[in-house]
Length: 130
Image (cartoon, rainbow, N blue to C red; front, side, top):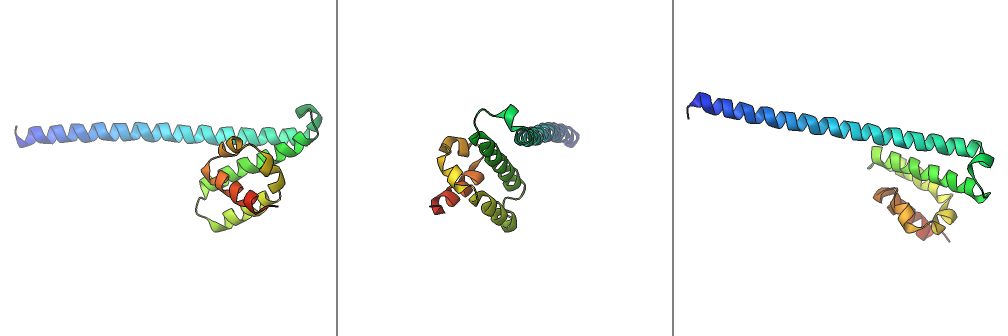
């Protein structure tokens, strides 16, 4: 093969890699946007539920559960956006600490659904709570 042939092969391979990378980036961008829309919609629903408790619950205690759920969704979003920021983590810890008694009775698998960072934070808080 001549140098020109090798140049064509390398150019074609690089173009294919660029196309694959671009497709992955677009897919990841779309996934991130869908996740953000879902989280925003869920928080909007929690807000609606808290504003209309008679229509959104069957038990009085469920209102507080919706509030704690909203706090956990918020914690997940903040810890994803700022995983290494001590200020955000300290603030979330303080806010979730107010709900330690409630979080102690939540099933572990439900807490785990909020992601490993939130689950670890909740474990810290509930282990300290009396």
